[in-house]
Amino acid sequence: MFAKAFRVKSNTAIKGSDRRKLRADVTAAFPTLGTDQVSELVPGKEELNIVKLYAHRGDAVIVYVSGGNPILFELEKNLYPTVYTLWSYPDLLPTFTTWPLVLEKLVGGADLMLPGLVVPPAGLPQVQKGDLCAIALVGNRAPVAIGVAAMSTSEMLTSGLKGRGFSVLHTYQDHLWRSGDKSSPPSVAPLALDPPDLGDKKGSSYADPALQGDMRHLALEGVEEENGEVQQMHEKKTSSEASEDSSIGGLNSDPTDSKTLQEQMDELLQRCFLHALKCRVKKADLPLLTSTFLGSHMFSCCPEGRQLDIKKSSYKKLSKFLQQMQQEQIIQVKELSKGVESIVAVDWKHPRITSFVTLEPVQEGSREQPYHPPDIKPLYCVPASMTLLFQESGHRKGSVLEGGEVRTIIINYAKKNDLVDADNKNLVKLDPILCDCILEKSEQHTDMKLPWDSLLTRCLEKLQPAYQVTFPGQEPIVKKGKICPIDITLAQRASNKKVTVVRNLEAYGLDPWTVAAILQQRCQASTTVTPAPGAKDSLQVQIQGNQVHHLGRLLLEEYHLPRKHIQGLEKAPKPGKKK
Figure 1 (cartoon, rainbow, N blue to C red):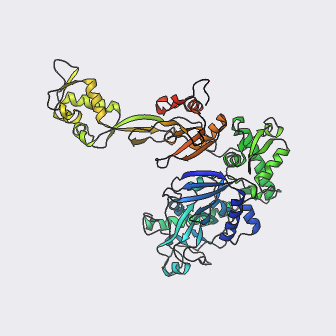
Figure 2: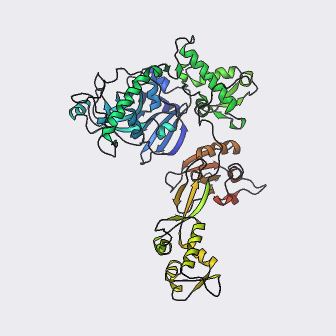
Figure 3: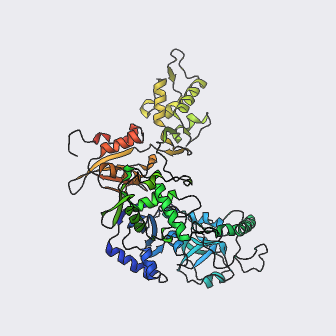
């Protein structure tokens, strides 16, 4: 469901009544959770947001976000946990096991076929058709996907473990997971031993790891070869389990370490807190939502191989930890809107910040890279009506060319066919092919000669437009048509107030949410991000008031986008005029 990008309709803080209703719904949907666990999952005072979105197939989904991570999602009035929640409660759902090489297929949108299941010595969990189930990988009980059983356990066994087993709804590494802190699954020891050697599968009651069946679901090429590959992966996993098990929840459980796991997590929490303040957060970022501080800054400062989990610390909750940091006068936290806390001030001269030394490197890619505008190059596509003119140079319908290539092809064609006028080298005689390609019908009955520049101009006009976009460090992307400029418009709302609307940011590699956050701080005005009307999978940013001037400075002076790719800058208010 979330294999492709989704469109966000709205993102709002949850109301008190909705919070209470959500707790009741969680209790009803997952009766194995105790009262304390439900309160932990749906906290009473910490920030909790409701995000309404449309999946790529058009399904309307409600996502509940806590601490920067999606914890639950609702589809057709059914409540589902995300992998982030299942990592805290791995026994919440009946769990089936598959092989690590299957995960890539699940992330890509495939369902789980029964030949891909691994049957543990204790047998498969008992489920009925339509039951919600978790899917884990061999050697680690931390779920990597959730899905709905396509048949009961007895039917699975009767079928000889053939056919579709689970309709997968959400996976680790899909776009819903990416909307959170992007942490990796913790290491959770399996309840039972791994299955025995699969070298001789005749008469075995264990599932054949060869993944067969419909290519739309989980068919993999080279089934015979994969049996050996899967076995090698299993053996490799078994040999490395000892080293994996030495890490529990991202903490070092070395018996020689005198600190308890809780003390280690407290230390890691404070290290990430100080690291984020010293290296990531700037004064211009304030006020900063506490959930954003955790999700975008603290998590990214966690050393590689460690996992930050506040629930395993002595503080249990982010709000309690930040209160302690406020008492130490490192930060100041205020509730700027009902139920939503923000860091409003930081004492960067505090001894704990100034004396902090980064001993461990930040995970690769966690630092935000400065934006660099893409290189945009106009191209030309050969239509069917001009294939005769370009086929001599080895091109055909749909070939994409640069302007210089088109010029060279036309010049070579004219010279090769002796079309350059003998008396005036600046003129080109038009043969039947050139006439058909570039002349209007009313012009084709005359003996025409054209200057070189007119010939080339007409030829370029008859070709179909295309363009190439190259982002720094990425392969070029070629698209047909003309690139849409960043469009800035002013609109009048029912309250007779003006709003600034900007569209097409994604085409230039700009994140609408990031642009909205920057403008909200600089303009001191409310901003919203909504689906752009009439545009598929595109978002628009709306800022209260006429903010074209601020927007222009951001796009032109900081992002260094060429002015020709921005339309609407002339709508900026004139000096002295009220916005």
